[in-house]
Image 1: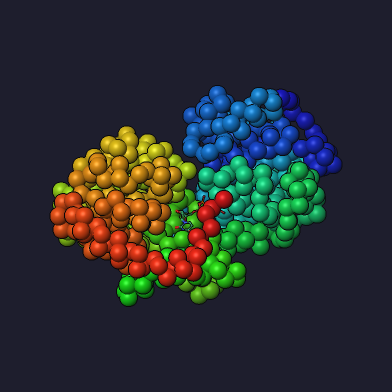
Image 2: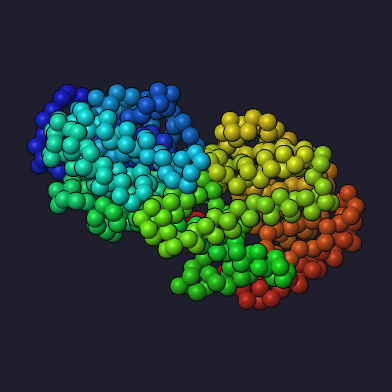
Length: 494
Ligand code: UGA
């Protein structure tokens, strides 16, 4: 890999760019690895020495399916390296992707721009020739224009340095696929040169027929928060319907399926349950409200307050239902909490509904044991007081109530009969609507989920076969109509 100082012409930047990626979290590490896979020489940069050391030694410091193999491949080409040295990065790169975090500011709804500002200015101060800084982080509208002015004023390269915005839409769990084969690319540019550079660097992806939307800086920033707000709204919409269903003993599962048949609505992100979490959706809808208020457009996105509130109520409702299943009090009740990650195939516990519910149950005096296939370490870092099990079996043994909080395959695929043999009382709350309700009922479990009518909880420690038969009959009645109509399952995430 070349690391010499070079003075490229603007044309060279367009033709054979060398790439740096600043910030090597989920977004940046994936972007760096995928860019190297596309054939570029890439240097990943981070201030976190531990992360850089891990990546340099070929280890991905978080759980992301397919990424370790992709890192291996990219490293073996010799085109990918990682560093903590910003001046090396400034000299090396023609295109600098900013992939640093923009978390929620403590005590405010606003996004914390410290990292993005530091990364842009630190690089710019040391860039001496034509180059393009490309922001990928999710930022409040107006940030890119402000940063563009700032980096051009600050940099020895002056007007030869440009800045564009290119929001990222990758999902954790599908990061490699989403990076190499995105639904669309969005280029926010303030010059035709920046557009040319972006079209050049993404050529292999554009050649696959990927649609591209070229717009101004502000619009590109807005596309990202608009997309995440829409997804959050869709999830909260179906969860609001779940609340109404609960008030009349209607079935939100059937309701969602019926809505999904309408192509205009569609079934994706219409899965009722415990709601959204993670490092993106929750903080993005809050930062959007904050920024809109600053711009005098707060009324336009005030509905996002409700989206957030509906989402929060699902967590309280889950705690309430576990309490009901436990017979009215959580004190000393042994609970198996299945899942801590904010969604399956991720070890991310940021704003995780699962971890939040588990911790609330623990705080209310329940004897909670959490099991997550990947997120135990992160969960322990956030809540060191929360007992963790090393396996599903260990978590389930002796449980009086089981609550499914993250829909990992390991939980979906476990046999209800085998699990029933482990617990003290076969009572399960499926807060992700992910388990086979009939299978659980047949195996003698009192099965409940959010937004759906439920069979009465048996009073005995283990239900009698008569009680099971009654519940099965009730369930047949509940589902018969839907079966006649050949229910369409909600499309699973690809
Ligand atoms: C989200 C967006 O989907 C990505 O497009 C975006 O790039 C990313 O944020 C980001 O801004 O970086 P991600 O946070 O990885 O991606 O997770 P999602 O798959 O969107 O799931 C978010 C939450 O919604 C999870 O807690 C999930 O369990 C929940 N969810 C999802 C539901 O409760 N119901 C659904 O039907 C779908």
